[in-house]
Length: 145
Image (cartoon, rainbow, N blue to C red):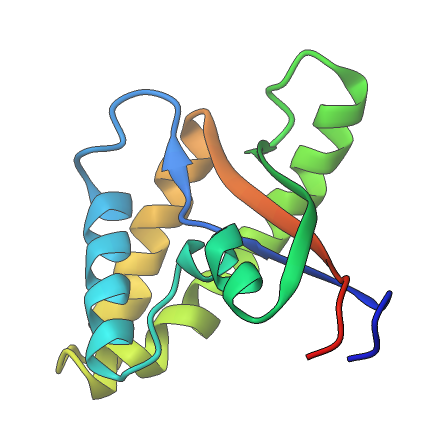
């Protein structure tokens, strides 16, 4: 990257419930997918957006932010309701896409078991106040090297 060039990286974290997310299908799904991804050598989460990694690569972090996006239309603010509606669709459509291969291959679960787990997560998320953290980092190369 040239001096003065910049990069923006963004990603989302684990789905969480506003209250009581410690139990149920969502907790099991998150724990299993996290363990499976680590076992596969491709950990998931937001750790890779830690500013120290950018700095070690010779980049200066210009901006770093994490914010929670509601999943669904339960937020009071109109802008968050719209974002929440779109985020809900993305999150629910991505459950099987994220978990199916990992949980079958790495954790030995059956396809039907994973689909049932995803269905349970879907019901919990649709029936509660769920959100997902989104993080982004903007970094710039300041010096040659």
